[in-house]
Image 1 (cartoon, rainbow, N blue to C red):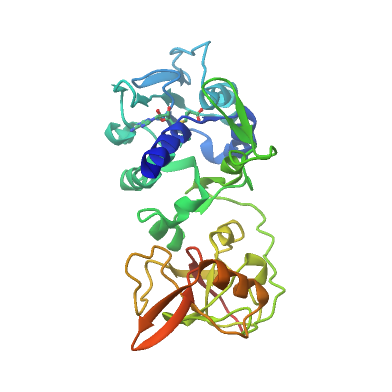
Image 2 (cartoon, rainbow, N blue to C red; image 1 turned 30 degrees about the vertical axis):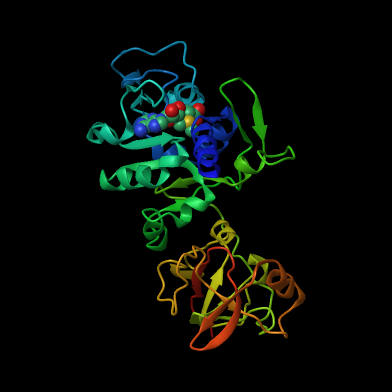
Length: 329
Ligand SMILES: C[S@@+](CC[C@H](N)C(=O)[O-])C[C@H]1O[C@@H](n2cnc3c(N)ncnc32)[C@H](O)[C@@H]1O
């Protein structure tokens, strides 16, 4: 069954090990913010199933010499340099039920969570961290932006992407590496992963400078959400459009909260009519004047629906984030 295959694939992705170089490149940016913090790595059962403090400043507690997980390795190597107060790692192995689930941890003992959580539970993971008022730097799938419990934090500017544009790769438990520089389906996974954080990110978001111009043939209004136009590619965000725009998820890498407001996403806006069973949910109606790329999509993907006695030929693009430019003259 296809759904079984998807679940099996997700479980495998839950076990992807983060590369030392990815951790070091990202965490170095937060050095000043990590000073004096009690760090928890809650998905590292390489070190310990139950909570184990591997570093405790000024108290000569144990400083574990042999650590396996790259998060623990990196943090331990930098603990003094960063002025970290303590490092604790814990984990849970769903295969044998050993350990402590991230859902069951007493977060009051820690200040910041740093880890790569199981992607299949990313939605709950982010919620648990916010519910416990934790600071965090964690890895997740870019599509996680759309998850029900994640999106509101993105929209309210409480959750943002970190520094790295993409990860270098992951390692599998058998030692094999999946690198984003490779070709093939799996190499797309690290490319589609991001760091998510609620710490300060001071990256010079070079203001994204849209160069495209609004054009009805490229930017049609959605059939079932007339307030917004569809933008088929981030590079086609028009610089002269004042209203709402539905943009692809990849926009999130270029998102500068001073430049754009996020108003919602496909499933949160007030669409009418709704297409029962359609997850994408925003429709574009066929129009012979639309540019060639749309015509191709209509040939490949369109469906005809009878709406108010009229046959409407529509195609639904992937999920959209609805944005609006700030201070457009
Ligand atoms: C993506 S791996 C990351 C491993 C390691 N932290 C790293 O990046 O090198 C996520 C790990 O979390 C474990 N895990 C699964 N469910 C968990 C839960 N409820 N609580 C804590 N860890 C869990 C998985 O078995 C897996 O080992």
